[in-house]
Amino acid sequence: MIARLYNSITLGMLASVLMFQVTWLEMRVNIGWLFFGTVAVLFTLQTAIKPLRKICSTFTASALSLVVSCAGVYSVLGFGSMKIIPASIIREGIMQTRVPFSTINTAIIITAVVGLAVVFFSRKNEH
Image (tube, rainbow, N blue to C red; front, top):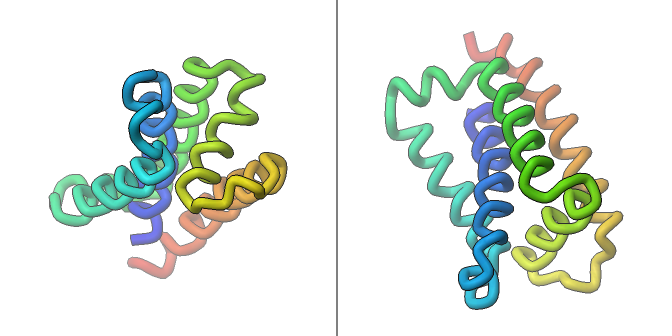
């Protein structure tokens, strides 16, 4: 279950960055809310569809989702915007626009690293 949540968060961020690139959508909808909605939908799909549940519950799938998400965000935004856009999406989603980007970025990095470690160590307890 932890791996599926982790995958949902990482792939949800990639989907949110892609949605952010659609100017019409970005100007009319809070992409941060779409991030959390996307995470919920992805988690539900990974949990409800049995073959997907099995595949997405592995450490390999989680590591791959992190790599794919980071590479996708980098290829869409570049390094400079990569330090701003994901943080702004999260900031909008939690309705805390006064929180500095550096704080949100630190939370994103900690979530990515610690989350992957938790997935790695929890896989031994699930079998």
